[in-house]
Length: 397
Image (cartoon, rainbow, N blue to C red; front, side, top):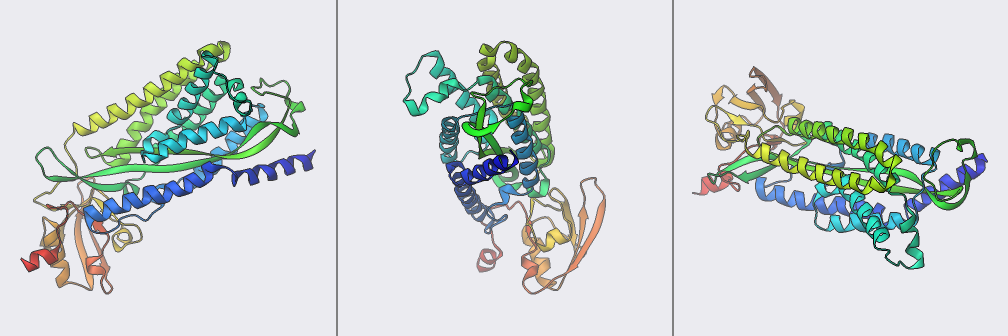
């Protein structure tokens, strides 16, 4: 028996490389990263974060929840067909084409799949034989998987870090450029999904309520791709992301309360899915409106220059500078814009000493020796009066 399980797990891992979703996730990483880097160069004249930064800090979550989802589906005998996995892949692929990471919420991806299945069953759509299993998938099971993956989305928002969100420049109502931050994270949950037909059985767990289609099954390692994205300019990105996480937690609790009802009355599962979609859309829109109504945080100031971004692996990161802090003086000289900052730095190319007002209003001093070229490459991002301003153009004029 143990040999059969090991064999099925091995075959399941090989199935990963036959899944289009696996390659779509890799291609999308480069595509969305390329577009972001291109925008960063347009706004700041250089790249801020490397391609692939959207995956930073998500790998532990991927492994933990992949194991949990695999165990939950296997022990409950919850089966999904290969045709269902193909349908989910098609839905995700279409959403990837428009490069809107926020649409990769499991509420939307699995919700669209659930609605498609419901429409097929409701209108008795005649499917080809190779797609006929779609009409047999239990919508209650799909709803439960949706809620499980929603927990991952909540964690991605709750663990977002301020220095790892992506800085941007936007025009305010007065036509001036202000800074904003985009929380954009990607995560893949690699789960062993039981599919009908195989050599495995769960005779030891016959007491458990199962959603399966048969008594025997095989395993397929399938990558569930999850994305979160929300832009903030009136809140610091980590604070705004935690607010979204709390709102999503409330939505999850309401869905969990409704999950008992759909177990008793499975025909109501489509209403739970619709409630999840409408609730997620409402949270996204309300978060955007509430943030927009607040005064921008990253704007030019007369008594210092606010840090909009800190590039990874840079001298600024080594000095433990944080997004939102304000540099008031450099080498004991007051500054109020980026031009003054680099003018002073050009006179002190081997050493950097700054007076920085932290987020609590306290002033601290940071200093660091600089090597050749670092005086102009500290890794700090500021709001510019003009998005393409450079010292060279000022010198020429």
